[in-house]
Image (cartoon, rainbow over all chains, first blue to last red; front, side, top):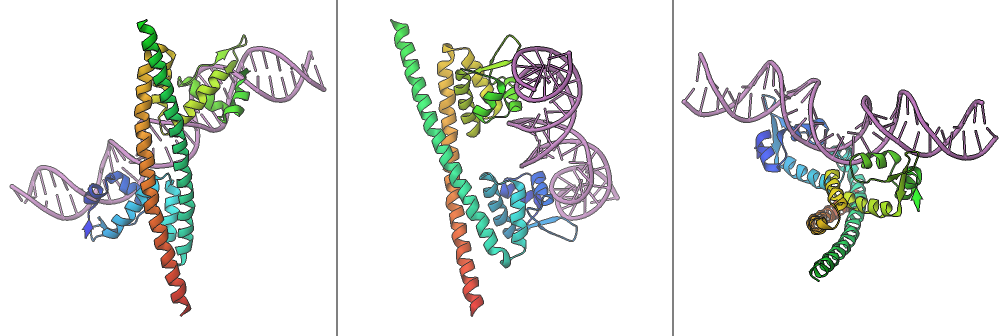
Length: 126
Length: 126
DNA sequence: ATACAATGTAGAGCAAACTCTATGTCAAGA
DNA sequence: TCTTGACATAGAGTTTGCTCTACATTGTAT
């Protein structure tokens, strides 16, 4: 299947402007038809979903761009790409661990507040 | 203990400019000495560490500012603050869940790459 | 044929969160 | 006394990642 930029925008949830911006930044390179309109394919769809994942896990556009570039070079860059992903998994693990630690602290703070409010209520009634 | 902005910067790991920016944005309000220099206290230290936690878990400056404002109002806002934290915990839980999902997908992709590279290596040797 | 909606490019504008610059004050050491 | 370095304010500049505007072109429905 091929999609116009409007359709692709709806499919991916990314705005038309964002899709053009991503293309400008070298993240994605859809085909063009005879009238110079962008023709996104199902491969583009898979690829953009992966881009979204990288973005949502904090990878900056420039790094995604680099990944896109070596991806375009094909098989010779397979191991380099895998190394990038392994590295990224590491930072993702760290992110998760840090958030979990933050959550523990936040839970404690909430518990602290709960007791404080309890005391105020009880004290206020006396 | 009291700290100059320079000392406080080193203690917190936040730049001097950032500390002044936070003050400008209403996140923190250190005392001033007779020469108008900022005097940060240990309470400020505890507070800024909490601010850092909120920031690191994705709370925008404006929202932290709101928290700071109601905090300054004291006891009457205790329950409002607790509700904010409970709400924030919810979004934090969602963040963690999403990152974990992303990690699962990333792991799969890495595994996929590993097999691909394996095939290339074996195939190339034949 | 005409209108209108979608698309194209180029570039401006925006929001967040810093980060830096210019300029001035002030206390302490050589 | 002079200089140096930390601090002060006000405001400009930077980076990232969009988001929007202006204007030209094209495809489609009437």
